[in-house]
Structure formats: structure tokens, C-alpha cells
Amino acid sequence: MIREQTERKICAAICQSNGLKAKDIARQLNLDRSTVNRVLYASPLLKDLCYQDDDYRWHGIIRQSVPHDGLYEFSGYYAMVSDFVKLTEDEWMDELIKGCQRIGRNLNDTRGLLHSFRDCREQIINLFADLQDMLGNACLDWEIAFEFRLKRGRYVRIYADVLVITENKVFSLEFKMKDKIDSEEVSQAAKYVPYLEIVFGTDYEIIPALVLTAAKDYFDFAAIGRSDSILPVCSGDMLFNVFDEYLGFLSDESNTNNAFRAKE
Image 1 (tube, rainbow, N blue to C red):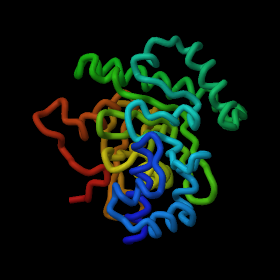
Image 2: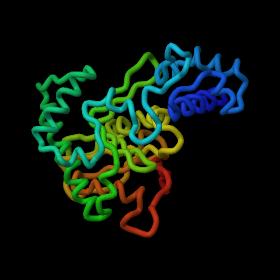
Image 3: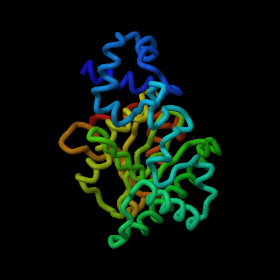
């Protein structure tokens, strides 16, 4: 546990900087330099999420600040929400396909993949129309990534349909063209949270959610496997409720402080 905490602290220090040498990391975190070097060169986590340049400075592949430089390199589409909502469906689709090809995303359409992309976009466009009515244009300053695929080495594996990044939260949205909850898909929606917590750092809360695009007027919570934790499940037309649950813009306070809220 202590080693994992040290790894995460070192990773966060690197990803929040413009490049740090081992001695700078040790000084900043009040760690012994030999400990830092051991982690830098032996940790699978650091090998997956960081790299060293020719000047022996360590950098994160994804910056833990706005904008999150590096997200583009691992996403089919990444932009500020203000830029995303300006695109027509065909313009966005063209950029998404080019991005998926760039990151090596399989585009085999035999099971309706491209249709699912368009369906997903429609839900997100409607979400931000709802959010603009409720929040004004503040939500346009958020970031969004579609088809985020991070697979480096053997430690980090993330396959997220959509990431919506607010000031201090990352909503990881799993989309299914269904109208009923599948327990395996609930677990899938929650699967990458630990890795996203590392990628985005301690300043962000990761909130997974399952979106059933064939359902209507639905919002509830579902158990994650056999644990006592739950996550939100909603229809596309009720997706704004997931954001309100954790941002609290429809009430004085958010209704929960934890993405994995324990069942009562």
C-alpha cells in the first residue's frame, strides 16, 4: 500500500509538471532520491504513464492540468466542449474516424459500430443542450474525449466510450444501445476507474456511469458486481441527472460525495 501511494505521488508530481529530474521529484515530495530512482525505473505504472527525455527529465504522457495535453494522442476525438458542439454530425464523424485510425481503434462495422458512434454523439449533444439550459455556458469550458484507448505495457488498460471532464470531476460514460441493465455491463462501466484515478490525479473524482440509449425516462443506481458499491444508470434523455447527482446544480448541494456510493 505504501509503495503504491509513493508511485502515485511520483506519477502525479511528474504529470503536473513540465518535466522533472529525479532529484527534483525527491525534493518536492520529501523522499530519498534512491527511493525515487527505484520507483522510476522499476514501477510498471511509471513505465506506462511517464517517459524520460534526453535531458533526464521525466514527463507524463497525459498532463494533469487543463487542457489535458496528451488525451488527444489516445482518443478518437478530443476537444473542448465548446468546439465539439459546433461541429455537424458528419464533421465530427469524419474527425472521429480519422482519430480512431490514428490510435489503432478497430472500425469493423459488422455489428453496427459506426451507428453506435452516431447514437452516442446524439446523446451527448442532447446532454449539453440540457446542461446549457441549467448551467448556462459554463459547461462549454469542459473537455470531452470519445473512444479513449490507453494501453501501454502491461499495467494500464483503459477503454472508455466517453470522458467528460469538468473542473474537478471526470465522468466516464459507458454507452449501450439497450433498454435494460446487464450486470456485466455495470461492472464494465466501473472497471477502469482505478486507472483513470491515476491518469487524472487526486484533484479529480472519477465517476463511472452506464447509459442505456434505447431506454426512456430512466435514472437509478445499480450494484457493481457483488460489492456494496453502486453506480448511476440512466437513459440518454436522463443523462443530465447523473451530472446533477454529483455537481448538484438542481439543488443547493450535491446529493452524494462519492462516485461509488454505498447502498443504504
